[in-house]
Length: 303
Image (cartoon, rainbow, N blue to C red):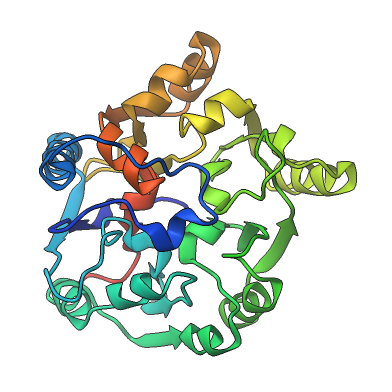
């Protein structure tokens, strides 16, 4: 199945602008807003409340003050969970983000879910090559396709390692923003749902690569909902499809992303599933990530 009803989210204790990640994340902007942590925590708690109000199961783990991990609110970059009972741990570009791999998170997961095997790709950090989880890759879990735009955070070698280990087919390409800079994570320019893909095709400048991506999407039986650069900059590509305990499907996004969509795009998405959105502006501005980055989907078997 492409989507799950179980999510892991990390409650921030010291959320702030991360200088280590800002070097190649053009979505990140240092605000002069006071009490960034307090506001981020408020947005986080409201987001959790919205998800739970729709009967989506959220496992919340509170971060620890030490070591200092300003981006811990984005767990999908360092871990992924799979329906064969395996987890994957990923090599991270920023040194302080490597500290997010805290045993307490796995302990919390194991209270409810079975972990049968760990695939640890973190040794690639010694080679200075990276693959930041389902930020670097957007997974078509049903068709076993890993879409990845290559960047300083997403290296072909590690993508190949993941694909060989997890038996995925890699579809890699170069994607850039409106200024021509590499897009740091694939999940800000595309989202794969069960029957459709939201994607900023304009960001893939090489026509052969763009054709390859489009053809892969079409061959997988999905329709394309295309977004432009302006919508991408407002995180309209950073979305995640989930379902609840009743089997109802939703596309989860930030309020900023929702308001960037056209009425026609909203109508098309609604033909497949409902939309859930929440205001996380402080997190988006300072963290350079949005709703999808905050949710690590749990596909592990329940205990």
